[in-house]
Image (cartoon, rainbow, N blue to C red; front, top):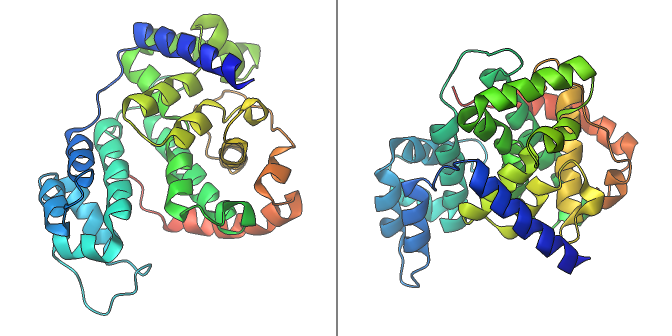
Length: 291
């Protein structure tokens, strides 16, 4: 199974790379990877990289001063903020800020694609994934922020298709609406790959964690994930809850089919998930969207 998937992954990777001009990793992430790979790296070294990117520095300070950390004194130094939250958390915040800087620029709605609606969907899925993971023993060793990032980035392939291949992607969305078939059904026919494949290849190109790249690829078909089925199932359900909650990623297209096995894979039954919905909606309402 794994060998077959590896061959398939290689083909998809080549197909996506030859069709879509994927964006390169933001400079702040490249430099952070370089600095954090050094065994003698200090908070000051990491702070120097982050301070050069105002969007990332602002996010670092906002988060470290949030109720989550419960600090008694306001932190205004990036270096001190990194000492408080740690290198790994700082890198996760940098990733989110870099993604919003690269892809979050406000644009007007075009036919069946509304950028503001897309990011609302992404943030809702991130919040849902974090909440579900926090209540499941399956994800006891997973940092809540990792679950959030997986949910946030699961559909990143759609915004890349919109930016790099808009005419084809908009035609595909029209077909999805007219035929009342989900995008994930139409995409292989019209593109030869799916938005999930595009997002996964971007994650690989940006050297993001392997489990994240794989979960992005299989978030519509977690049963096919040979490596990280619990994470892809978590994102699959978070995506479904976002659609159900009135925050679809595209306009007028049908919602994909839910794989009922996702509940057992994440260690929560449907009733437990329903009980968590008010908290998910509350946390989403309190979240800061990228604009």
